[in-house]
Every structure is written in C-alpha cells, then in structure tokens.
Length: 152
Image (tube, rainbow, N blue to C red):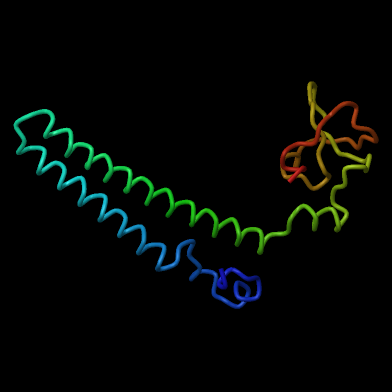
C-alpha cells in the first residue's frame, strides 16, 4: 500500500503504474499451477480406475483443483480492483471536494434541467449529460431527483 499514497503517485510516471504488484501475480500464477496440477493428476489417476468408487475419489481431487484455480483468480482480480479503487480515490476529487467547491449541494435550489417533456431528474449546470442541449434554469426541484452523474 506504500505505492498508493498521493505523494508517491504524483511523483511516479503514470504509465508505469499497474494494478498488481509482482507478488500478486506470483500468487495468482502459483495458485493456477497448483490447481492445474491437481486437475491433471485427477484426470490421469481417474482414467486408470476400474470402479466408479475409485474414480470418484480422483474426481473430488479434480474439484478441489478447480476450486483452487477459482479462488486464486478471484483473489487476484479483487486485489487489482482494490488497488485501482484506492488509486482512484487518491487521485480524483470526491463528492466532498465538489460540494466544497460549490458545484452541487443538496440544499441549493438552483438547478438546470433539460427542456423536454417527461424529464424527471435535475442536473448541475456543468453536468455532461445536458451539455449542448436546450436548458432552462429552475428554482425548485418540482419532485425531481438528481441524476446519477450529478450525485457522484
């Protein structure tokens, strides 16, 4: 996690940042190798059995190998998602920054809405969803909810 602090991310060349560290990739590859070896051993041993009872023991080993591969992939993907999410929070301004800058507050009444029939949401003046569309300033919400982009 030391590599995800804002000062380090600001100093580093952004093209060299990756969501996984070398030890994350090593764990994923080792998990895949162990799971694959268990499945290959299961297949090889089950093919030499004569009875169903003997085959089931090796099929169970193959299922364990499949589970090891799945868990290894899941842990690898979740670690990458966690690192990307942490970097996103550190680099991009959050809702607290946007409200502090005065872009959008829950209690303010001035909204810009798209002038179209059936519009049920209100938007900030700088919302990318209404850029280039005819808009009119509204003072009240009129039972409208904020769009998901404006809430973020």
